[in-house]
Amino acid sequence: NAGVTQTPKFQVLKTGQSMTLQCAQDMNHEYMSWYRQDPGMGLRLIHYSVGAGITDQGEVPNGYNVSRSTTEDFPLRLLSAAPSQTSVYFCASSSTGGSGEAFFGQGTRLTVV
Amino acid sequence: AQSVAQPEDQVNVAEGNPLTVKCTYSVSGNPYLFWYVQYPNRGLQFLLKYITGDNLVKGSYGFEAEFNKSQTSFHLKKPSALVSDSALYFCAVRDGRGKLIFGQGTELSVKP
Image (cartoon, rainbow over all chains, first blue to last red; front, side):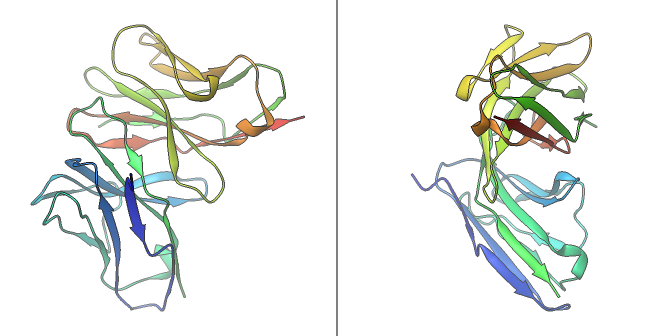
């Protein structure tokens, strides 16, 4: 089972460039989410989705866009990269409802110079 | 809004000793609580969860957690620590729609 797949694993961007982080899951989970992990800050929720066509903002949504056209895919777009977006990004999926645990991708390490 | 606090940035224990990693939460309604572990340069792995029922929850790798409603706590425990348990541990709380909020993490260091 592939689980949650994130691409790329590493990326270096110049300030002002745009890019899309890809996330795909093969578990038919309705709920998907994006987090960023920074030292001492834990994981902070950027955006999440409870199903195809439905997205909502998390704790730190500014500078990021998402869409959910299919159940499997939940891409995260950086519109104009800034050094403050240097971080490790994790995608997660789970069944809808409170009891199911989340499954995480291996992460994307993004550096903005 | 739900929130999670992990009051200790780092916990140090000797191998073979019991370990506790602390977590307190704030949520309206019944809490769904989780513990995850992260090894260096890896994603997060699920350890255990509390949904309802027994206050002592058993999980992977010999870990367990004790749910205390009156103290709004969900501390992670293990009777005998291993060096290989050294990692970053996250407590999380989830609402009814699935939104999962994490604490800031606790670095566990187990020395031989």
